[in-house]
Image 1 (tube, rainbow, N blue to C red):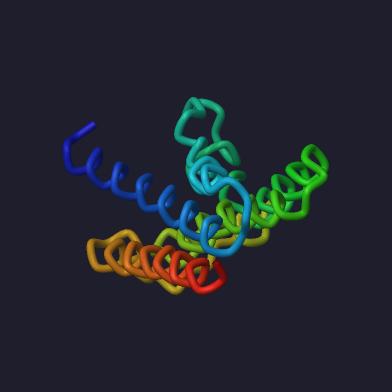
Image 2 (image 1 turned 30 degrees about the vertical axis):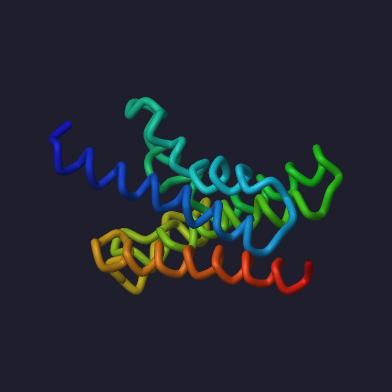
Length: 150
């Protein structure tokens, strides 16, 4: 894999992990590491062999609202804590939402192969900086909010 692609994917992975972390830390009392893990989960499809084909390709099954709902429901069924399910939903939902805005989009109506996207450059340098800035703002707000409570 060429260097540019490795850097692009590394930046995208870090961004999804950081956004998930910030959302879980900012809006729940759950362990923010949930945000890192579930913020990255949809990209586990990179590990699928190409021979498996559709829907087990990048931005196939793991990048659908159906997958998000299944994972959130599963996390609640396992943990029995609403806070955990909300944290999982924020993290995995942020990943799918961000990718849905990109030019490639996601399959909103899975199992039907329909894709719609506004085509925003969310994984461009400007888009990445904006996502990081918003995430840092959420973390700063949460830190300030907790200081005023204590």
